[in-house]
Image (cartoon, rainbow, N blue to C red; front, side):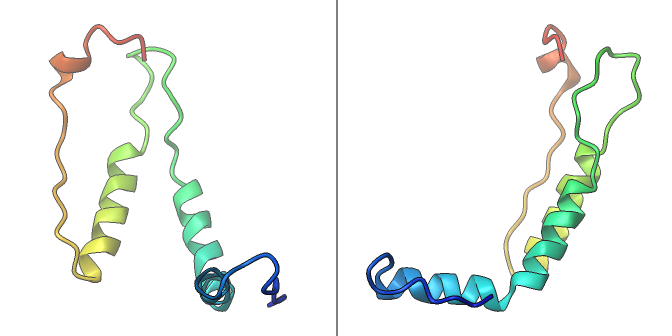
Length: 86
């Protein structure tokens, strides 16, 4: 872990970014696991129960708001997607 990819493959900015990613590896893996944990698979029909898209969006909104981002969550009008097969 923490292997320096070397100047031959990365410039200084790229190496700095790679180093920052490596330093936060556990946090990034935990975030990825959290995001993957939400069921956002497509429904086969409108009769299938809703998935967790709204919960995923809220989780991301909360995370972004906590670091000062301005977040605008909105729910699309169901009529706009009424003819869509999914």
